[in-house]
Image 1: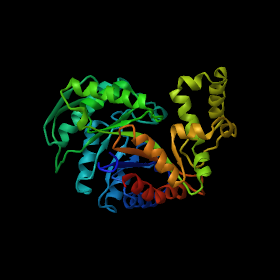
Image 2: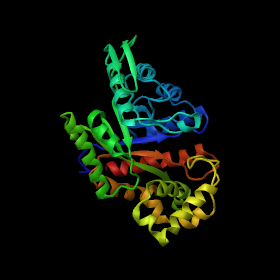
Image 3: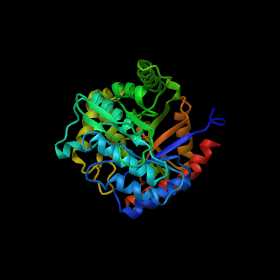
Length: 349
């Protein structure tokens, strides 16, 4: 299958650096052969929509989109206006990654009724982007006899989640569905496909027409040990979030308690370059656990690790780019991207 079918690869850059550096990395991502590029939409980080406008003027082929935006901090009508502007600026290269969002609690915004809110938001946005007059008196969102002014063009809708309810919603409404489990096993891959098919069946869709991709975190370096060490905080974070039964039972439950305590002693977000990781994370998280939650290592190692995931029936992957611990986030992300071209070529070939 891998040798004969087109494989779609998506990259995501978290913009914790200068605007010039983000645009430069976007150009490298296009040259490396990525098909789609997402810019993280996180409160207090540089605005992803402004960055995408700048990137659209420096790139020619790669699709662009927020990963993921949310209908709580921006009204769906505002999102439709942003996407219409960027579709025009990029000559039709946008996609809309939408979900519950990240960082909203820092500004006192909650995410009530996520499935209902996302369904209503996507309905409003897709109608407006088709140039229709939209009236929506929903349970959470209101749009009154509204139509976009200026040129509009529909955009693909991308939904990524770990939630069964939101994955079923993706089956109803999405063009692209991203499997957010991080640790992708045959059982988990089949479970997500079942949820997607259940949602598609609700509205009479063929689930096989939806582009399904696993969410993978990618960190590449000629120094494979450095790449794996750089992902230990990330692996600890997801081990604590996902709470797999085997990890919950490790050392009679003491291991998970130790991981959570080490994370509590750490500072900064796990993707921040200036974060401080508690030293105990290095001993609690071994290379096997890093491999469970991330694609990290040398280019050849990353090819083999990604092939293992694609072999579960996927025709592509959505890769959240991570930086080996270099002198700056930009330097680390550039290192991952500069190796990505060879990795993608090997996977496609």
